[in-house]
Amino acid sequence: MMTLKQSRRLQSVLLGSLSWVIAALIFFPIFWMVLTSFKTEIDAFATPPQFIFTPTLENYLHIQERSDYFHFAWNSILISFSATILCLLIAVPAAYSMAFFETKRTKGTLLWMLSTKMLPPVGVLMPIYLLAKTFGLLDSRIALIVIYTLINLPIVVWMIYTYFKDIPGEILEASRLDGATTRQEIFKVLIPICKGGLASTALLSLILCWNEAFWSLNLTSSNAAPLTALIASYSSPEGLFWAKLSAVSTLACAPILIFGWISQKQLVRGLSFGAVK
Amino acid sequence: MNTSTITPRAASADDNDHQKKGSVTKPGWFLVSPSVLLLLVWMVVPLGMTIYFSLIRYNLLNPGENEFVGLENFEYFVTDSGFFPGAMNTLLLVGSVLAISVILGVLISALLEASEFLGRGIVRVLLISPFFIMPTVSALIWKNLLFHPVSGILASVWKLFGAQPIDWLANYPMLSIIIIVSWQWLPFAILILMTAMQSLDQEQKEAARLDGAGPIAIFWHLTLPHLARPIAVVVMIETIFLLSVFAEIFTTTNGGPGFASTNLAYLIYNQALLQFDVGMASAGGLIAVVIANIAAIILVRMIGKNLTDKS
Image (cartoon, rainbow over all chains, first blue to last red; front, side, top):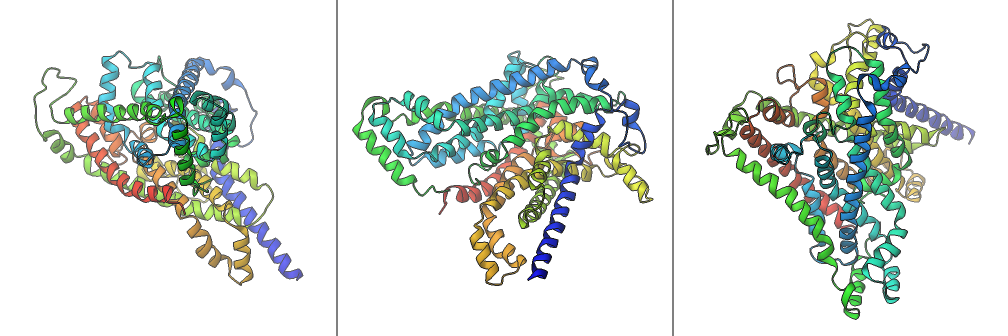
C-alpha cells in the first residue's frame, strides 16, 4: 500500500517537474524579451547574456524617441476595435437566423463561409493593393478596417452561431409568445443571455486583428501603420536597438497576452468552431 | 456538445412561424444576406481581378502595355527559379509545423493531464502564451535575442557545451523559420488539445484503470480516439494560416539566402510589390489559391463531417 502510494507521488512529482521544465523552455523567449526591455543597450548585447543586471526604465521612458509609439498604438486600437464592432454587427443577425431558423442550406452556408478563409491572402494581394491605390486608400485605416472585418467575419459568425445554438429554444418561444419582435428578441433576450459568449468572440476578433501582419505590412507605411508594422521596422539593420525593440514589443504584446490568459477557455471554443468546449 | 436537439428545435421554430405572421416570419435570408453578400464580394471581385491580371501583361513600371498574353504569366511563374524552392519550402513549412505541433501538442497535453501537480494553472498559461505574441515580435525576438550568432542565448548555450555557435538564420534559414513558426503554433495545439482532454470522461478512464489497463493502453485506446476531432480542427486551422506565413520571413531572412527560405506567399509578394509585375504575381496568386483549395477540399470535407455530424 505505502509503496504504491509513494510511487504514485513520486510519479506525480516527476511528471510535474517535467511539465514545469517544458513550460519554462517554451515561455523563455517571452521572459527574455521582458527582461531585455529593462536592460541598457550595452547590457542587452553583452556576451555572455546577462541574467543579473541593474534594471532601467530608460527604454520605456524613451519609447517615443525612435518613432511615435503612441501613433502606432492608437492605429492598432482604432483598427482592431472598429473592425471588431463592425464584424459583430454584421455577424449577430446572421448567426441568429442560422441558429434559430435553420434551413437545408444553413450548414452549407456555414461551411462555405469557413471555406472563404481558405483563400490565401496572396491570391488577392494584387487586386486589393490596386483597388486601395485607385481609391486613395493605401496607408489608410479604412482599408485595414474593411479587410479585417471581412477576414474575421466567418470565424465570428461561427463562434456566435455555436453560442446561440446552446440557448434552449423554449426561452425564445416564450418571448415570442409574449409578443416580442425579432429586434426585441435579439436585443432583449439573446444578447443578455450570451453576454459572455459575445465578449469572448469580440476578444478573439480583437486578438486576430491586433496580431494580423500580412495586410498591415503590405498596405500601410506610416500614416495608418499599426504596431505589427512598427515592430517590423526594427528588422532593418540600421543599428542594434535590442533593448528598445524589447520594450516596444513588450508593450505591444502585453494587452493581448493578458486578454488571452483571461479568456483561454472561451477562445478554444471559438478557434475550434465550437468543436471543442 | 449536445446538438442532437437541432431538429426538434428547428421544427418548433417553424411551427411558431406558422402561428405568427409579420415580423417573426422568415427573418432568415434577410439577416444572413449581409454576411453572405460581403463575403461573396470579398471572394469574387478580387479573385476575378486576379484571374484577369494573370492573363495580361501588366507591369506597374511599364504602364499602358496591357495586351492579352494567355498563360504566359503562369509559364514564367512556374519556370521562375524561385518557384520550385518556393513550393517545396511551403510544403516543408506546413508539413513540419503541423507534425511538430500535433505530436508535441498531444504529448504535452497528455503530460499535463497525467497528474496533479503544484502550479498546473501557471504551467498552462506559460505554455499557451506564445500564441498571443504578434508574428513580427516573435520573429524579431528569435532573430535577435535567441538566434544571434554572437549575443544570442543559443550561441552561449552552444559555447557552454564547447561547440561553435551557429549562425542560424544564415546557415539554416528554413529550419530557423520552422522553429519560429512552430513556437507560435505549438501553443495553439496545446490550448485546443488540453481543453479537449479535460472533457474526457474520468470515470471511463478510472474504469479502464481498474480493469488493469496501463497508462499507455489508456492513452492509445481512450485518449487518442477522443482527440480525433480536436486534432482535425488543429490541422485545419493551422493549415489555413501556415500556407500564408509571411511576416516571419519578411522580418528575418527576406526569403534568403537565395531562395532558401522563400515560400510561395513571399515569392508572390516579391513579384508583386518589389518587382511590380502584377501579371506574374497574379498568376502566382492563383496557383497559391489552387493549392490552398486542394487542401481546403480535403480538410473541409474531413472537418465538415466532424463538425456537423456529431452523434
